[in-house]
Length: 260
Image 1 (cartoon, helix red, strand yellow):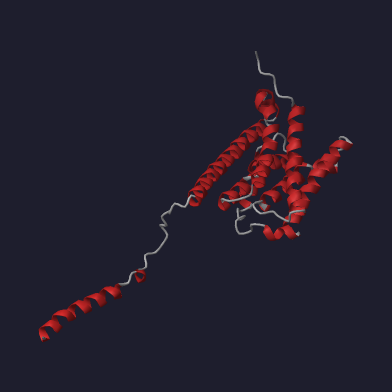
Image 2 (tube, helix red, strand yellow):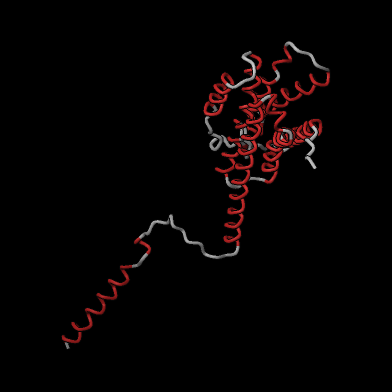
């Protein structure tokens, strides 16, 4: 029995739910808990760039009031997150020393790909392709930050999964009906596949590291003495002067006996 293609409407709905949950979670932490520890500002800036280039059609094309509201909502929320992480009280908890992935290493290659790999040689199509390619690697700074940090709160991992799962869920319909999707837009199909590999690989590395950190913490809590290979041997810890004193005392014994 042939596999029925996953409904595009269901995929879009599921992706939309993931998007709303992830942004609601982050906004809650930024506004009420004043906490963005473990969140990559670079990733959030990339998402803002993605939405700006993807929704340029708002300037000249009207589809429906619902479509316009959704696009404006994405833009406003993305901009609000970036501003809050930069200037709000939550910015004091931002891991700026760990969030150092070079933006140009992600933006420039995606721009070059968009210029040469697109369906139609139009500015608006190049901008849309650029947003698709940039979304493939947008979570890389987030993964790198968490990998450097090693220890982070559970909600940060949940937020990262929601962000990656949003696009991954929408790509299910492409995978189940890839032949038709490939005929319509082969570059987007390839981008969806690459993004799935990037997301699942990054998530697997984080989970593996998290397991190792938990295991190490469990060993420390058990009270077992762990070797410290970074410790420098210090000769001053040993009391050689006591040994010299013992030698001096022993040398006096024959002298005293000889005097008698």
